[in-house]
Amino acid sequence: MPELTVNSWNELQEALYQDAWQPGINRFRSSYVFRGMENAAARLETTLARLGGNYAGLERHLLRNFRKYAHRELVEQDTFWHWLSLAQHHGLPTRLLDCTVSPLVAAHFATAGHEKFDQDSAIWMVNAQQVQKALPEKLRAELQGEGADYFTVEMLTRAIPNLANLDALDSGHFVIFFEPPSMDERITNQFALFSVMPGPGSDLDDWLDGHPELWIKIIIPAGLKWEVRDRLDQANITERVLFPGLDGLSSWLKHYYTPRI
Image 1 (cartoon, rainbow, N blue to C red):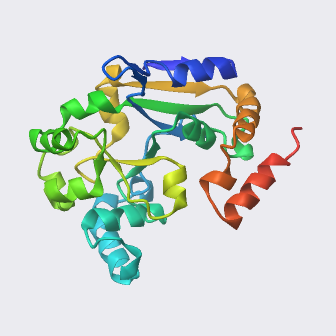
Image 2: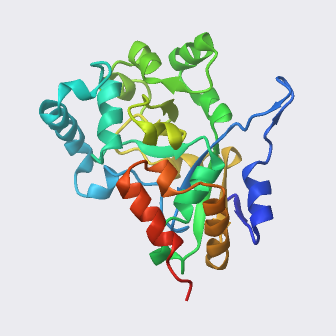
């Protein structure tokens, strides 16, 4: 497993921003997407999979009823991918996984909860540029035609209008990263991405195990988490920014003033 344990803030920064130089455009633009996990031993499990039981068979019922009961004016466009993004954003169990383009936002989520500061945390880095080479030709053509780094919901709607079309392509054998619509400041401030795979039972851990050259798992030891948290706070990577509103403000104040015992 391509794991890397860091032992200082500087080592963490070097690991997160590795291979960011893009000679073709003469800029520093990382090809990686990131996901922060408070527990390094946790799997990359979707909220749908966490339901347990016959969770794959529940997916269509969850989505159908969410769409039925939610207010129609909540979505910018009445497409499946807009509704799925909205459902994930508001906590419905789905096959999507939250990711981010920002390494520091991922570091925030890896160190957000003081109750888990006795556990090592992790930041997963996945090379999205290389992952996209495994996409079916239909999807690669859509991405290349737009000259985009990631899919938008509009692009997905054109190429695969719903999950049935996605699942018909090649279950479990590729990963899509797409940008959700900017429904609120939370999505924008978190530089959010979602990942999705064909097949409700598909497992990103299993897929990545078969492609070890495409990812790195950075381990943040428990003893380093207080320093990382404090440095992120000073850089304004906090709940106050990432979760705009009184709830985010309260969460930030709670951890900012929590004594280190």
